Length: 469
Image (cartoon, rainbow, N blue to C red; front, side, top):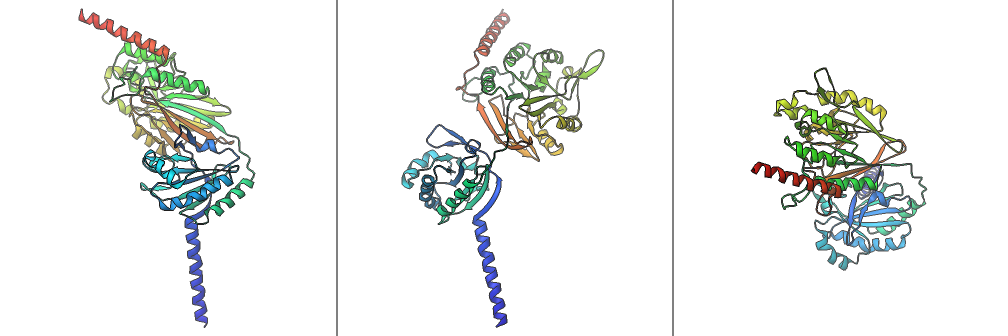
């Protein structure tokens, strides 16, 4: 009898443990910041960012689904009811993971009578991966996230729940009753570009329909006009990849139309001649902290100030630039005659701690290539953001190595990147987002830059005529 009771207790214990594990596997209470994203609202021209939805007033509910998911369909009537019942307390969005939502959504919405806004996230690249819904390229759905007024995920539901309407109603009521004082935040906008390569205009041909400095001038000036506090940085190789003083001169004249805070010296800048570069640096913010130049009397740093400090509100941003000496392996020796480039790894290890004491955020504008940028992030602490250059790599999503984000905008200045940070009251990074402005035909060239472009073309024609003679 006693033995039977003991066995019974063991079975009951195992049963409750199993039940608890099943419940926790499909429904859990969490308290983590909700990853930010920016998605297109299906059927509209609106882009929706989570950061803009979190307003200290509404609960946000995200429901990840695709058109092939049968359990997902069963949730729709319940979500429709919830969206009406709690319209003043909660905003519900369905996040579509179909590869081509435009092909499947019209019929899906009609058949399932969807009354909730749909956000398009093809294959989950923008939001699905951040929320862990996409694993090894496959979607685990339905999954539902309840985000409080504080921008944190409070509840996470996996799979279909028969009583989901009641569960979410309870969550909405509880979270709405909570008072939340939004901490002081500071928004930092850093605009980055690179690898213009002296291309004043795009050929707008099928192989290369993007880019051109005349468009870059227009795009950057528009961004700066919209947000005067935006910090404008460039990772170098602005000038042509060959010694060409005429093209370099026109490129520099266009650069002066942009309120750049820093332009990293690239190998293509040095290719025009170090004396030419030093002369241009008097009116253009060319920087390289580990670059030393020599004259007949002495050697000295290329920049008197090794880094700059920019202030946005009460936040200080320390910005430094370095150049990789290894990229000059096959460089013309005459161009390096009066040039010395210090080892950037050793240099950064020495200088970053000092910048960190002065600044809340440290940004490295690097002309080192993506492999070296990764190594810098791995080996050197204290850098919050690396804006890469030289390798013309395109990081669609910022690469995170340790506590450092790495971005790079790709080749021939096809696009301008914009990374935005939100900082808390203790100057800590709360969140970030990264987007691009594609320099295509939709962006008209800056009028003043276009005038310079036409002048350059005319000068080339005159020179061609001289050669014919």
